[in-house]
Image (cartoon, rainbow, N blue to C red; front, side, top):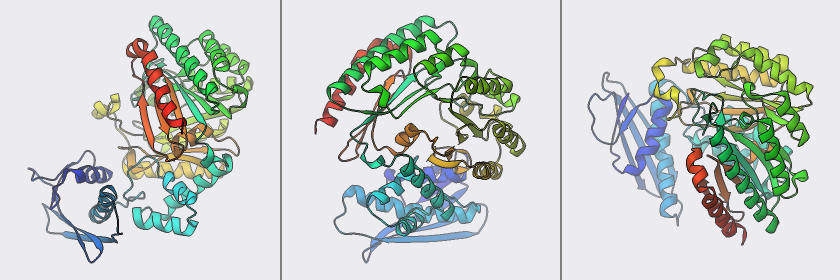
Amino acid sequence: MNIQINGIHEEKFHRPLQLIGNLFFEEPTVSLEPIEDTDLIIDISIKEEEGSLKAHASLKGTKEEKELNASYSKAVQSGLTEKEYFRLQKNVLSHAYLTVLQNYTGIIQKWGILTGMRPTKLLHKSTQAGVSREEAHKSLMENYMITPEKVELMQSIVDTQLEVVPDLYDLGKEVSIYIGIPFCPTKCAYCTFPAFAMQGKQGRVDSFLAGLHYEMREMGKWLKENHIRITTVYYGGGTPTSISAEEMDVLYEEMYESFPDVENIREITVEAGRPDTITPEKLEVLKKWNIDRISINPQSYTQETLKAIGRHHTVEETIEKFHLARKMAMNNINMDLIIGLPNEGIEEFQHSLDETEKLMPESLTVHTLSFKRASEMTQNKDKYKVAPREEVQEMMSMAEKWTKEHAYKPYYLYRQKNILGNLENVGYSLANQESIYNIMIMEEVQTIIGIGCGAASKFVDPETGKITHFNNPKDPKSYNEGFQDYTQKKINILNDLFEK
């Protein structure tokens, strides 16, 4: 689909126009200049008059005479900065543009003009500002064109988060820790996380672990010296249970020795996402160090799907490892399902829900497949046939119905670019089994220090909320060559952040 935009020439508007075009069409070309083989021409004007900023969009397909028009305007408040004025321009422009595309395609975008990852942050911001629920909902629907059902989902999640973490808005003086283990048995076709196959790489693993322990010691030392508490610790990756039981044991011992007041950390999670990495010995290590929140991720209960996406474990192994973990007193298990995996439709997803019902994990995260730019699946789309938009939306509705019937409540949500059906990823849990770390990472209320290969740090200013990002390198070789430097750079940022 080639979309030619007339009347808008400033490059700063191209990205928002492209992102909204992506909601309706697969890999459209949106151009501010004339292009060959144009499928749609949309004339857009934006002007300020009588104290209001008004955008008008007129769409005409090149193969038919039908013309569609939409307008939207907003009052211009006095004293706006250049950035605030651009935000207002983008908003009115997006309203008009989205409306004509909705009218043209017949597709209603339930998230409206929102293309960002964390919609619930908008509702938290209103709550903190003392805005009434009614006014906050009205603003979301009017300003962003979000449908009432999605606003209600957002409100449900915000309510649950504040029940689980009543002091959510006061945790800026604490931090959470993310520890990245960049190894997996194999790499999944949809994955873009830093994950390297384990086979024959023990030397690289050993070198990485030496750097990881160094980072943990230095970061723990800084936290102790500055009297900073840790809210949560999350071991991710990759698959952190890819390393041996002995290596895990030494790693958790390092955590207890290096980090302050580990016994009072609210939650420690280890993603044992790949069932083929779980052994009785590793579960014993987790028990030894009082870690009972883990993930065992089936993604699908259809064996052909697992083979297609590069997961070299069986459906039976997922179920077997779940029961093993239960037998060994793992009392808070998360499982992931993915909607829209290759060759899966309603029948296969219903089967996954039926199998989940036999296990009843404490939490269930329902992801919608996203075509991430660097993934094997995105680079070879012809090999991976996925369900159409309507079917994907029906599967999400099935998940919503199933979780409600089985007493799971939504507690966190995030969205991704190129996500099927312009939907979302939702974490559901049984009562009092929510992951606090997932709430922290999504709502961005506190600093999260990333330790390890590929780990991303997100430094949140406790006073202003301004976010500074810092990423460790994704490949073990680069990480091993520079972990001391990366550690010091993060400590320098922390010094600036917490000396205020």
